[in-house]
Length: 256
Image 1 (cartoon, rainbow, N blue to C red):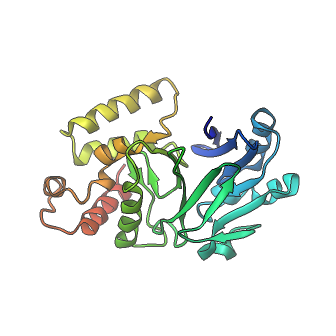
Image 2 (image 1 turned 45 degrees about the vertical axis):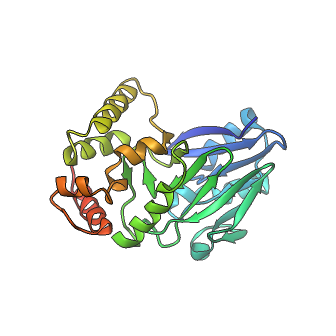
């Protein structure tokens, strides 16, 4: 039996994640911006909290850490490069490090761009990726503390993971991202099918996350910047992938 993954809606459009490894009963939460949401879910998931896994320092991802540590005595693992901006950090990690959750292993992938110290957590056996605000379904995070080259490098690392990886991002932004994606490549059949699926899910109030990484590679414009045909369609024939990505991010930043 594999890792149990529970999606916990929080705030206006965040998703917190609660993970339970069934063999050991160990439990972790990813990016707990709101402690009350996690504490309310613990009794039905496993009743204990062993780890907090952090992707980056923004308040909607770390705001619940102090209360959770006080209530459960759990340990906190997060990016070493942002150690001073993550409350209660016990273990600072870098790429190549890993945290064990019972029999499951979460490998660290450094993905700066949205923030300078952003990381993702990759459970290879369970094909579960927790990527914070680096990669969204049909989108990606804003470049608050990095540039296009940095973010493109980070996204390329995630795109190198297997197609059957499940992308557990931190926000329900997919419908807005779908509308933008349709403006830059309206005639791409896989994207049109994906957008229809997203619209149907949201129309009935259903979540769109997690998504399948293979679908993101085929449809997410921010992962397609290295495709020469796609670059030509947005008027950037011959441009470097990072430049194509940067132009897409610029357009998304002003999209309404």
